[in-house]
Image (tube, rainbow, N blue to C red):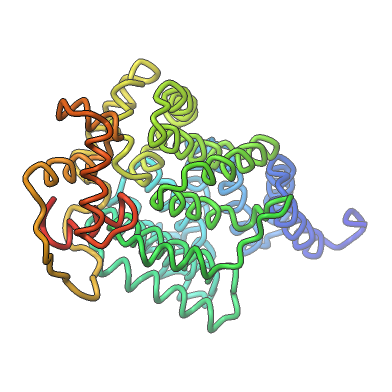
Length: 404
């Protein structure tokens, strides 16, 4: 029995139990267990376990969509695990990484960068591989959002190399998914599709929630390839699991992706319903990046849902204008720059630019005052001239050619 064990064994067992509860979706149970592990370890002077348990407590609280509470937990831990001069102790490494993630969630990119650099430094000081991996994977996303595409790509590839060397295959899989997402945000649909085709992601029930980031990114690839119906089916299953587990932060991203899928299918009322649900989850906790990281389709939708959370939507739209979804500066490298043999007509260029703005075929028809069938004919010609098979491949090729 755990209660009969010595304090060190009990805290270690409690921590392992909390990890297991989180893995099977019992987030509420994990929170209770991590909190108990922290208090017991702190009482008996086991600083390493106490600090790590506190960080995991904050992670689980954030899973429940309570970012502000998770932030307060980490800030308390950062003050607690510092020397007499206020410098963080190596045991606080994971706390600083979680602080970085929570700052990123609120789109505080400078703060996130500073926290993650400190977490990375402390992880290396303590030779804690998992802290270093966590730092690198989070840091790559912050670097990309700050406009440093090449640096972000190098960072995430460093994380994958380290994960392979350490035999941490779950972390390597997450790193590959992050790299695919970064490339997709830059327009690299072929690379993202190659990732989606190469992973061994289980789709039988129940879905493996330890790989939720990979599922989330798989949905992004489906949407980029205009396979909206498949995306809807997977999202419905992910939504059920997230609701059952109480993972409101994951549910937030799912609702945003559901809104994007419905928008692409022309179902505007349903798209706005999902977007409204997402805003109700996000606004109280300032989850700004949840919207910024899902692509430009939301800029078309957000103004129509502003009544749900006016100030928050204003903040997100302002951030959209500043960051343009991470494409403010240096871009990820392309292996080659193609040439266009058959130039696009002026009308095709107009349609292409509206495709890049993520308007639907009916939306483009309304904008250009032409029939939807004419729009589809133009799109077919555009795809042929750009050697593309989807909207996002066409937009990627157009960006390489400076057409949009």
